[in-house]
Length: 296
Image (cartoon, rainbow, N blue to C red; front, side, top):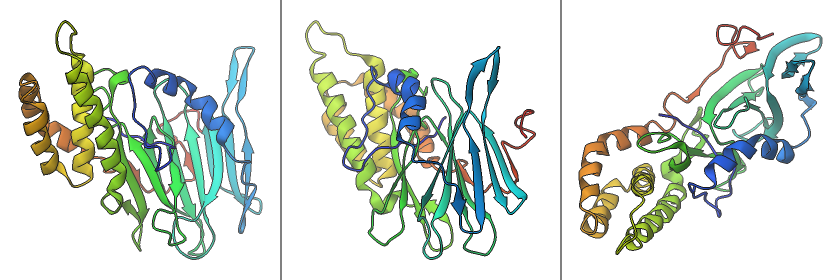
C-alpha cells in the first residue's frame, strides 16, 4: 500500500482519471519547480542555504542541498533531487513553521515534507510526512489563523489495478493542541466530495457497459474502491455500503463478490491514511546515512 498527498484546492477536489495519472506523475517535477516560492533565506534565529540540483554534465548528476544554520553551526543538512522551502503557520503563536518539501524525481514518486518549529526556543521537527506521489496544500480551513495540511493519499495504488487506475483518498492534517494529527473527520466534506465524484464515474461506467460495450473491469473496481475508501475516511462507510447494495450491485452482481472479498483490505488501507506516514525526524542529516550512503 502507498500513501501520498496532493497540492489541489478544496473546491477542485482531484478526480484521478486513468489517462491523466501517468502525465501527472511525469510532470510533477516540473510543476513543483514552477509553483515553488523563492527559497527561504532566513527564519528567526536561523539562516538557510539552498543549492539547486544541476543537470548531468560529464555523466555526473549533482543533487540539490539545503543547510540550516545558526551562526556558523550547521544544524540540519539535506540532500535530494529537488528541495523547496516555505513558511506556513501550522501551530498557534510564535513564528510560522518552516516547511521543507523534498522530491526524489521519477515517474511515480516520491515527495516528503519536513516541518520545523522554533517556538520552544530550539529547532524542533514536528512532522515528517512521507507523501508518495502528491505534494501538499496548506489551507486555513477553519479560519483560526493556522493552516491545515490537505493531502490526497495513494494508499490504494496498485491494489487490484494498475497505477494509472489507482484512486486517491482525501485527508487533512492539523494541529490538535499538542501535535500535528489526522483531522480528516473534522473536514469530512473533502473525502466526501471525492467519493461523490467516484460514484458518478462508477454509475456512468456501468450505464455505458450495456449492449455490446464491454465494461472496463479495472476502472470499475478502482472507482468502487475510491468511492468506498473516501466514504470510510469521511465516517460514512455504512452509508456507502447501503448505496452499493441498492444502486450498484443489483446492476452488476459480480462486483458484490469482489467487494466482499476485498472489503477488509479497503478499510485497512484507508485507516492507514496517516499511520506510519506521519512521524518525527530527530536527525541532523536527511536522508539518514543508513538510508542513503551519499548523504552529506
